[in-house]
Amino acid sequence: MMRRLIVILIAIIGIAVPTLAQDGQPLPVPPLPTDTPSPVPTITPSLAPTLAVTTEGFVYSADAEVIFPVGIRFTTIILQRLEDIAGLSLRIEVQNRAAETINVDMQDALITDVPNPEFATIWAIDAANPPPLFSEIHYVWTVRNTDSVTNVGEGILQFTDSRTPWQKREDQTRRF
Image 1 (tube, one colour):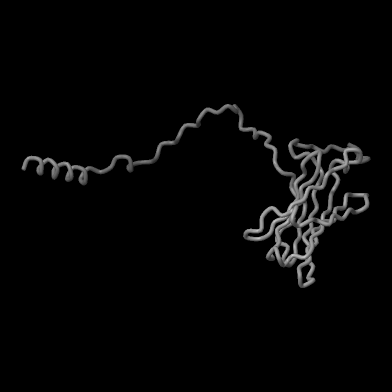
Image 2 (spheres, helix red, strand yellow; image 1 turned 90 degrees about the vertical axis):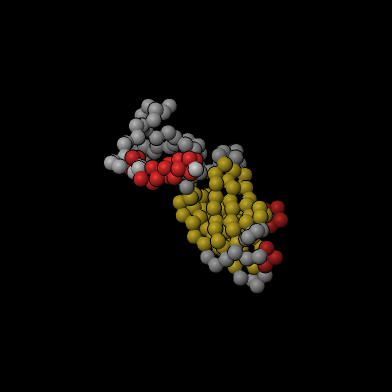
């Protein structure tokens, strides 16, 4: 009997006493000390942004990543079943140079086919004749399906080392 009274008394007190944490304004949280003593952002390597990408039809994406200084990895995702894709090519145009077309071997370039086929190929950069630093590289994926319908996905990227934060300074004659 005594235990019941104690349990009932505790329940009444628990319900009747207002929760003090909900009264008044919340206290501000003091700033936590960090290893960086100033609010200056740190430099974090990131992918070089692709300047422009356009796609049409069943070409879902066309992307590129500079793997400085050895090559550029080009990827594309196609909104077709793998067995419906008849051919795949990549045309690369470096500023002030002749265009180069690569007929992509689909089995070698296939990354995944679920849910849609994704292909990647690496364009090796010739160490004796690399693209000029900061030059624009225009690339065009051309995809042909078994119904002989051709769609393209293209983009423009800037050839730089994305691990380094670059600042461009020129004089009036546009020299660095």
